Length: 182
Image (cartoon, rainbow, N blue to C red):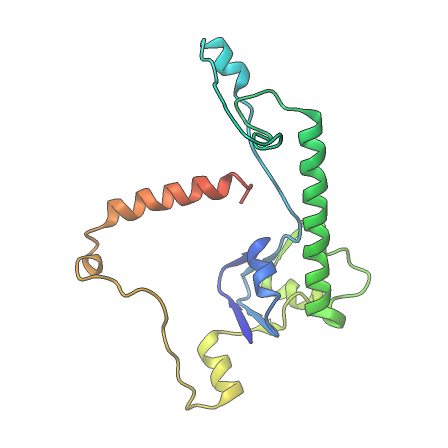
């Protein structure tokens, strides 16, 4: 299986790409960021200043862990750091297992740092600089066929008629991923 990175495969994107047998990039692709992050905010002081009372009802002691509308609890932070550490170790193990002896010796590749395609090749994070169609034709011959997968766009979508809906969906998706620091 081959993975092709046209622009960015950082963090979770690189984790996915590393599952492939070979990873190909553009010279300016951003690759790496082998680390784990969780970001949030604390708004409990702001709410209190505005006279807003937060009401939260849960079943399960940890269900409201790190709720941004409540003061941060030391045990929640400790648990989150433990989970992030475990996830980072799993990420590192995945990269080491899949990239193996291709990884550069003596380099700490697991700090969350990221690199451009050419340097990623030197570090062994990827196999080379290549583009999808030419590379697959090189590997499998000129008669290789490509099939597109995905939802078919509706008639109106082809003319941009649902631009507002797409914009709202993109904002909602970005907000959901931001919760995890992505």
